[in-house]
Length: 288
Image 1 (cartoon, rainbow, N blue to C red):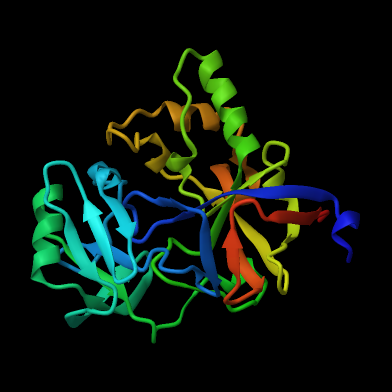
Image 2: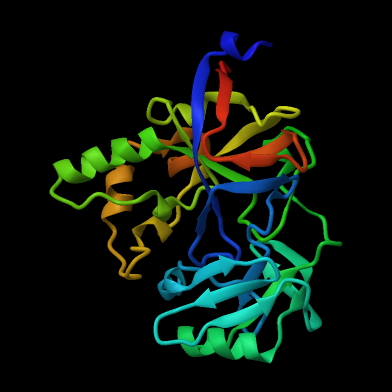
């Protein structure tokens, strides 16, 4: 189908990668798309002494851990801490960890990294890296039977949101006497400009023009929201006003009334493609 004949024309307004699950993200100008999502997205994860993942839900100070990806290493910085440098091609020992209901093999990043996270977050923790030999699949119920692997994301390789959806939330926050919030609270990978608010909920296949073979993504499940959007990424302070505001207009009967914002998505076509901010996006609405 010709892009001009599709229902929606938009622009890829932002790309965000979150190297360490539940730590701060990085806005990037370009990122390689893999079947597991953006390259190095949620490739690392923090776990407790039992190997269970931890997140901003119980440790909001994770929002203050800021990553920088360089050619050969990942650098992590946090207030009051010396920078932690992790070589991209080094791990220390195998580990078994749990992310939600999935127990998977991973690689422990060693005692120095463990001490750094334990010191900053105030409890015994370790850092692990996803084992590329593991195939952790997204829910086949939601993907329609398509095998869509992901690494340490909550459940799907990509999260898509629109700038208009954030603008709509901020209008409601300001009308209620509250401060506007940034997209960082919702932790998307792709932010689209040119849509109406929450049009991403209704999109079928999404096509991104990269200059080579077009990329095709498919939104498959509304993203049910936990308390993390209540965490201020700049301060780690928690205030329920975001969840309370969304509760008034974003309850999704498809998910039993859960509050949703953004769409989980999978890659249908485009493994190895380079996504860049500013690329043209087109899609059709889903009518089902």
